[in-house]
Length: 242
Ligand code: UDP
Image 1 (tube, protein in one colour):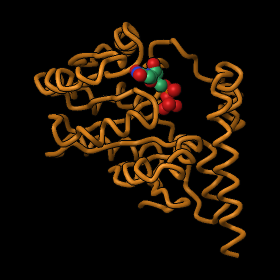
Image 2 (tube, protein in one colour):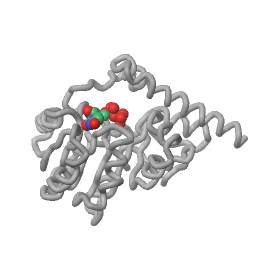
Image 3 (cartoon, helix red, strand yellow):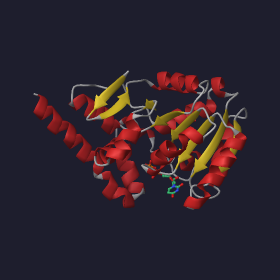
């Protein structure tokens, strides 16, 4: 099911398949990991072997951006579709098959996760949230955070500390966490709280979500240069294999 996209192993799944896999993870004995690289993150992984290794050990790795899908087509190893991490997390929070699962939101600025829970509960009153924790903690507070999560034993732990920090955190601590599914969610908690608006449909439909994000958050410009870099890597790879 995984496809090798320039050294990064990505699951070739539809949104519905990803949701069913996530559901099966919530029945597992050990913590399963879900990562959601977009082209920006994928390029960062090509430059950071530790990060690449962590992503490649993920149990479910979905193509979060149009750039990853485009790169897969350029190298003639096409992925079916983009599966945005935000959409997968949102689907889990609303799908009736997850009504009996408990969630823990870890990440974003103080107060934001609470807001995200409140807004999501307004849409799905069945939602069970075991707890929240903001993402601006000191290194020495890590154990305390893990102890609290383990006391609450949520089925699903969302970690939104930004990439690659969240993936490195998940990898370092997953064996000590009493949860079934851990997902790196980037800015999803901000999105659910309404702190960061998602792109209007026009941008998403035209594969221009990156452009909307650039207009809204110009300070991301430097990291976003990773997107054309990743596509360029794909073009170079195709040139070599021809
Ligand atoms: N964040 C955090 N702790 C930090 C740095 C960032 O909790 O020390 C949060 C930040 O508030 C935001 C998320 O991590 O909610 C990063 O979102 P972004 O969209 O940048 O995610 P990425 O694209 O890096 O995965």
